[in-house]
View 1 (cartoon, rainbow, N blue to C red):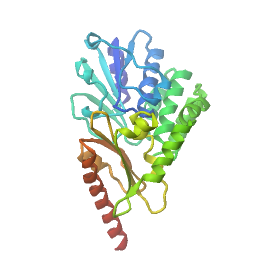
View 2 (cartoon, one colour; view 1 turned 30 degrees about the vertical axis):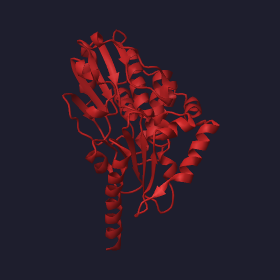
View 3 (cartoon, one colour; view 1 turned 45 degrees about the vertical axis):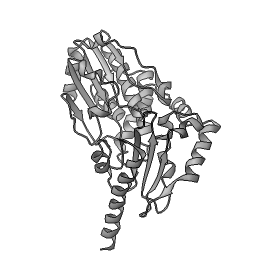
View 4 (cartoon, rainbow, N blue to C red; view 1 turned 135 degrees about the vertical axis):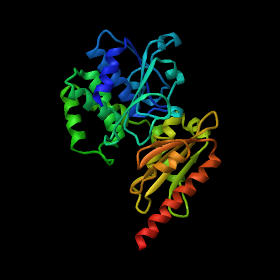
Length: 316
């Protein structure tokens, strides 16, 4: 798999790195970490990054890239494998595409794909690939990649966090990753965010099978003066770790009326529900985009059926 990555990096002088829309720390960290690794190890390459920005922009800024730059360029797409979730559809203008991902999705467009779902994060996958080839790392690359690992592992709490994960973290720390800077940037909150968390605790609801959920219209982010990502992915786990609740979901309306659905499970795989609605992700942590908040009820019905089957299986 590594050969596919390095063969293509060596082949092209211009590279644009994309990732998914509404990026989380792993998408941002993988994208900017990979950019820095290529710059360090292939200094003749011109590497650009594109996509929407949010609370993770403390890791670095996106580049302004003209359409002409894509001519005879390689596009690398990290942390996503399905076309409808890629931020900036100009990836299709490139001469060749390469996907590097760790989710349970197959690609649905013409590309070379290097996907390994055994990794807890895309950043850990990229770290391992470049480490095994004895490539050069510096503090900037290591900090960005460690951010991806920290966030996608839930601070080393989620499944697939294993000895390999910690070996990669140790390697990144040895190469200058600034762990305290990461934690200060990610987890130090102002009063507004604390109040938003309280809003979720006070207002989430339960379905007939005890699935916790929130439906947030577009006014919630305006009320608390935060971006959509903060309300959506940033708040979904306010409903986690509650006794008797094994599945939880957060539905957040965007300004254009689309709804971001973040789905989480403590035990039973739910990724097929996300795939049913055009999304995907991990077995226990996944998401999709819906047409409206009304469609959220269909998703909740599908999740209820999983809970009902699980309960029936437990009674046998």
